[in-house]
Length: 191
Ligand SMILES: [Fe+2]
Image (cartoon, rainbow, N blue to C red; front, side, top):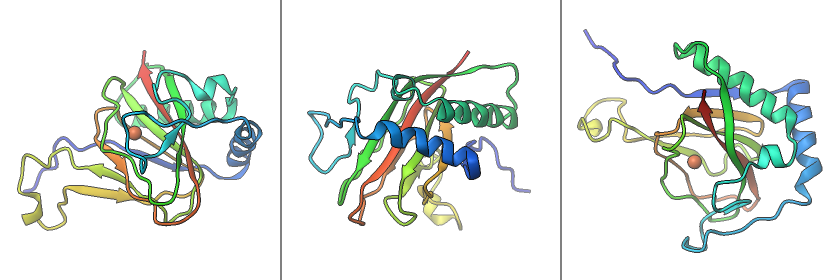
């Protein structure tokens, strides 16, 4: 008998309808004033960010109430379905990321936080995928097991929301389509 032990809970929701329109509209309204910067030590083919220190709260600073409300709602669903109870999620920091042609991100985690996530504001379905590093890669000869892989790539659509444990290693793969990919990432702590 095969046992699947220590699986990784990841939440994926495609926000549609009025909920989606309200979120997109409020981001549209602040987008013209958004400024991007590069982290000095990063190469030129790495994404741009609204805050390279990851200490500010883009969602709060731009009063993105609808996005915040949806993030909290789906985080509560995620916690509940993962077995948690009576825990309040709070967005601690957030930023917008811009990925242009041939750019990508390094492999990283958000280890200082309980949950990390991303909302896709502008995105082509086929552009730079979200690659998750298998956290059990070091434990087994994954390549020798059918359907076991060291990585898994999700191709999300505009309006999708991903939530995952802060410790999970991930990256954005190289963007091969010549359009801007814009997303809002955030860190959540459970109180
Ligand atoms: Fe990330």
